[in-house]
Amino acid sequence: MKQRTCLECGAAFMPQYGVQVCCSDACKRTRQERLRAERRRTHTGFDRSPRVCLVCGATFAPRRKNHICCCTACSKVHSRNSGVDVLKAERTAKARRRAAFFAERDRAFARAGFTPPKIEVHDGVRVERRGVVPGGCYVGARKGGLV
Image (tube, rainbow, N blue to C red; front, top):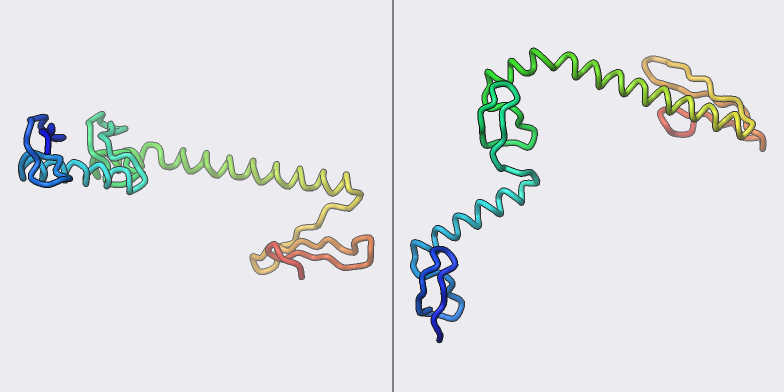
């Protein structure tokens, strides 16, 4: 066999077997730990590289993909300051999307020559009554399915 270069430290060595890529057991262990850490970082589905805390600006290693603060104290400060505003903005955006969806649906019904369905709420369940459709069948929807 010919001389090889260690993939971990870069030293030249003579391999004792055909697939040997590290010069010593210490280099082999170091390489395995590094590869295991890289695999864990990519396998979990999120980047574990250091992040900056949104509150204090400290650098920290995230344990979850939604980690944005370095500690519990910063997390409490962040949630106290922005939690209500973020929640309110999300709810407003959802209401706008929902209103746009129903407005577009009503326009589609009008273009097709049908009357838009009447929405009734019975015991907390949304029920759409569409009435008789040309062709003779009754169509009603309850939670997305036909009645």
